[in-house]
Length: 148
Image 1: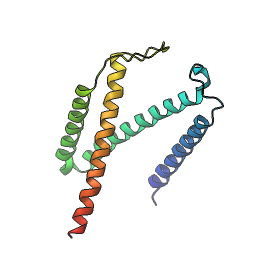
Image 2: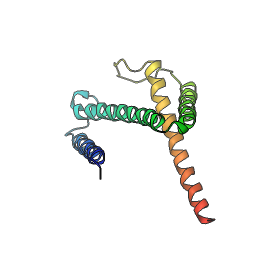
Image 3: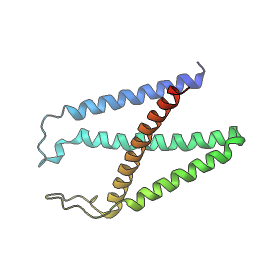
């Protein structure tokens, strides 16, 4: 395996270990009294870690598209079409998202505003669409393999 393969594999193992440790800390918190949010410190850390992993994934995806376009210019058109398609999909999910503030009893935070609610809805819609596309792709590939 090349040096880059060892480095990427080591980084992925490190990220996985950190994720498992944080999830274990979150799952083993002593008490789950919703009226006392200070006790959920490790859950907040898990949420922050999830956001960091999402940012790493987005940066990695964009960099792989850019590097792929630089290395193989014949696929440049396909790369541009994929990026435009992804931007359109995000735009459609953003348009479908509802930013109506939620009536949360006892919540005094600052995130119950239309902007953050639209971001959350957009992420949920993208997740739903990705799950459906993955299931359809699995089914289609199995059907194609059946007829070969």
